[in-house]
Image (cartoon, rainbow, N blue to C red; front, side, top):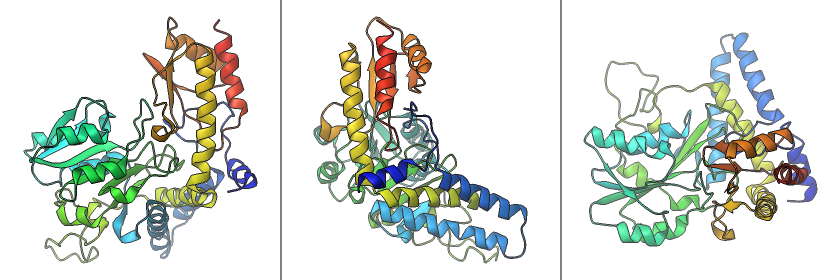
Length: 369
């Protein structure tokens, strides 16, 4: 992708130059706004063709998601959020033990807690980062799956999915929450059996958008415990009988989703496809490198992954002796939007972030001296 291609990409967004909170929420593009307004406007003038026409956005979004995930539309299903996909996985895996990082985002904890309470799979918590070595050491015969984030929300640590696949072998499922990774880093998604993605962060599709991509192994082994009326064969046949689950990933569907949200997701994914994930990743890597240098120069303790091969789009840090709220106030004064936590701050740029954002961070941190 050329510099002009990245400039064209960046021109589609209106977020302020100091917005560095994409790991929390990614402001959508003009294309997403237009698709949302068009779909909602058409719904307000509905006639006998409108609903069926709007529902076609589902296939368009699934096809775009499948292309980016390296699969096909039959192995892809739209979801309203990543958590729905994680609950489907947790209530569908075979009985046994599931390895889950103890420090993972809570969205990857509660589905397994609830499944255990229901007498299904039981989580075993990994005390360390989910490296291939740590997972190998924790494997026992009763482990049926491993569930983890592709990129850790605190540190930006990028999991080695290919190595994890080799470690757990073909007889266990690999469930991946790709919320902090999909669209911003290239990863071997085909190594996973269940990839769940929410669209409101790096994909910049806004809220109530997302999808899951399933492998053939997942389709064979996941029980349709939470399959709803839209996740079955002959969905439009109302014959008062239970229908078998749909043969593809559509079996994860519980009910009809918003075609307005589907149109927004399709638009967001197509904007991403036009620039390409490699170009996005390269630009974000460059910005992350500069941000790391800047916060280090001001005495920050780096909490995020520093090895380039294991790093994604997140810079987490704290300034020793300075309350994060005080640092946040200085950043806000320069127009910088970080994620603020009680013990740290997080900066997460996107490919549309201008280099001037790093200068704003420098000015803000220098003001604290």
